[in-house]
Length: 305
Image 1 (cartoon, rainbow, N blue to C red):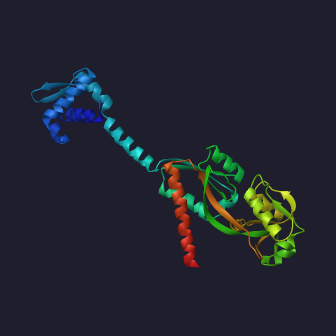
Image 2 (image 1 turned 90 degrees about the vertical axis):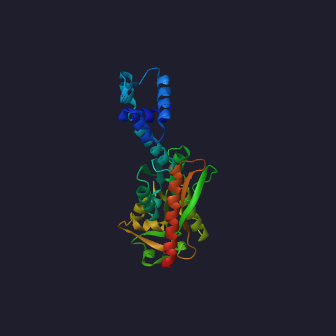
Image 3 (image 1 turned 45 degrees about the vertical axis):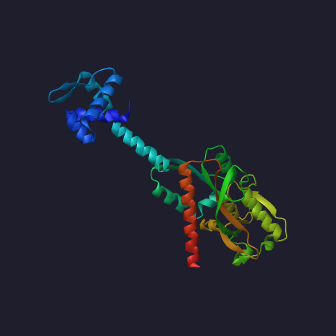
């Protein structure tokens, strides 16, 4: 049984006449009559009484109509849903991001623009450290993550660098170096350096330690912080200093100041990561929207410069 058989049957049932039904469908009356006979043969019972003025439903025909009358509409809805899913307009996506990525202006903008462009897609967000985000990505608990480039080193992960920003020194407000707008790292060689553990944020840890070594000293490791936001709070408690991506300067905490690095400035690179073998249309749309958003921002920045 094909859907067209049901459509033909319903049209004859509505019109009560084979000739009028054939005209509405756009086929000849004899082919329509043959299609209905084929349907009755397949079902094994008569659906219409052929009467002089047209066609009347049998009891079997009434029972059949009551069940199938919504089939064409359901089929159209199913087709539209399949087409929307094929275009990535419905479905779901799970996106993770690090604390520092959340402060990048472009990341909230990507989330906003994607929701507006694809309102039928359910987007679930999760904030965590790089190590846990990558683990969740590989375990297919997340579909895409925003993190600092360098955290992912696997052929199974595809990375797109999005932005690069300078690192800033975070100092207690009462530190002698806080009086200056630009601070040389080597002047902090005797201060404790506050970082998250390397296994939590390997990229941030490596960038900061490498910057200290490039300035000519081995950093004195101080209190370990559970996350980047805690690093700034520990600095406010005068437990030491740290370096954070410039976007983190939006986090205004009493007792801390952000200062530029003198000389060679370490850079933090934000990237979008996802599994190389993920062929989801929703994911492709999300990646495309993310890249387009950042290209537009780059063009705006170039124009402003």
